[in-house]
Image (cartoon, rainbow, N blue to C red; front, side):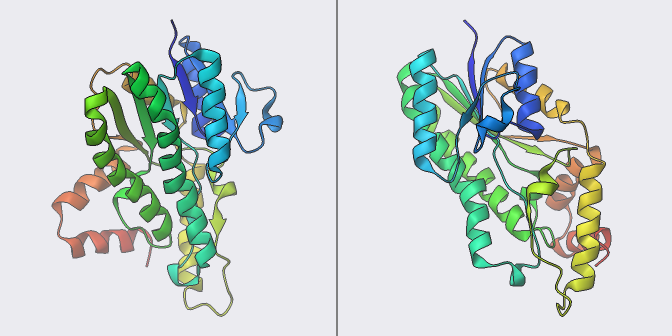
Amino acid sequence: MSKVVLITGGSSGIGKSIGEFLIEKNFTVYGTSRNPDKYKDSRFPILALDVKDNNTIVNTVNTIIEKEDKLDVVINNAGAGITGPIEEIPEEEIKNNFDTNFFGPINVIKAVLPQMRKQQSGLIINITSIAGYMGLPYRGIYSASKGALELLTEAFRMELKGFNINMTNVAPGDFATNIAAGRYHAPLLEDSPYKKSYGNTLSLMDEHVDNGSNPNIMAQAVYKIINTNNPKVHYKVGEFMQKFSIVLKRILPDKVYEKLLMNHYKL
């Protein structure tokens, strides 16, 4: 029997690429979107789910289980970008980002664990970000929310070992997706003390996404993880220098690494 996979945020970008790759490998795939009617031409079913609304999470998970009688793999892919000087980002937007990138995945995990415990098997893959390994200027909230999910996974996977349920992180670098269009940008204020440096950094970030890797690379990585008996705690997928930046952070003195980042962002 084919494995049943749930991908949150499966209507576009990385989630869509993963879903299309997995159906080619004969998996049964369900994606989600807040507006599933917009994706009627999807190659796999797109169900209604908003990670900030726990009722939609529970309803969608139950719908899949009732239909398939199992749920083998859950990919927490839904996420939101956010940029801006931390001082100038409204508190509401900070909370909104954590609701999407951190609390949302927690609630998805809570919804699927009873079924996975019942079947004594399961794999949960949390899509984080290489940005979650370091505090990046003008991406501090995003780094924090993704970094929090990384640490949560480390703890969660130990709690789940006794139930034969695996959990892992996959941290992508920059991929050519529409994430830049959907993220919250704190406005460039004329009287802001951050106007010049934030504006320069914003242009650099958009350039990185526009020149990002093909999201099919992420799909191949996820497929390989699904077929791994004992997944690692952390995976990084992206350009060599993006992955190497994590190694540098581990071995360089903090201030040296900070200087490298500031030079990179021309600060």
